[in-house]
Length: 199
Image 1 (cartoon, helix red, strand yellow):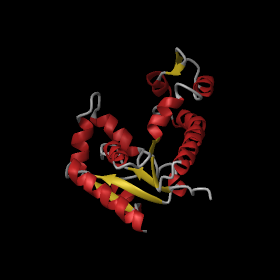
Image 2 (cartoon, helix red, strand yellow):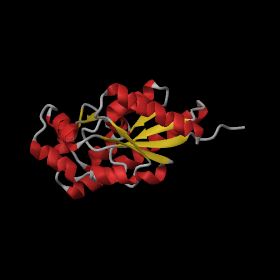
Image 3 (tube, one colour):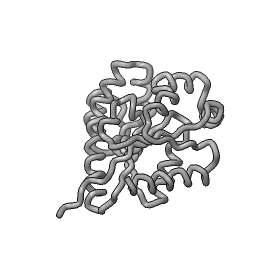
């Protein structure tokens, strides 16, 4: 009998909410995680180079897409951003499908799909449940503004493209609060996995 696909748990959260750290906690507990951002990074050095360079001539440097040059071309230009997304999203999806197939072969009961803009791109239809990583606004602001090169303006621009945290929490099947430290977040992840194993 062939093993069935794992339970697909979508992981998302607004900027500065602790999503990457939480993804790491799932990995720590033995759950395979597909990171959409990391996939994009790899695509920009592999199968995405030719189509992205064809659409935005001059952004490939030494055989890979230069994210700085590409960003300068698409940020703040909705038409260019949509054009880029129509190239990159199917490539990320193909990698996601391959990841889930590998997780199935490995017999993983649960696989996490770490999708930064899950609600914004309608990706909730591709998962069995959604976990949203959240923290109070004051904690989020402090974390984000501590990042190198981050400004109030950049932070506001990023937030304007994201579904508000309150809406994400309302729509989520599960919420992980990352404001109480790593041990508390780890305990919440472990409890969630235990609950999903029972369901």
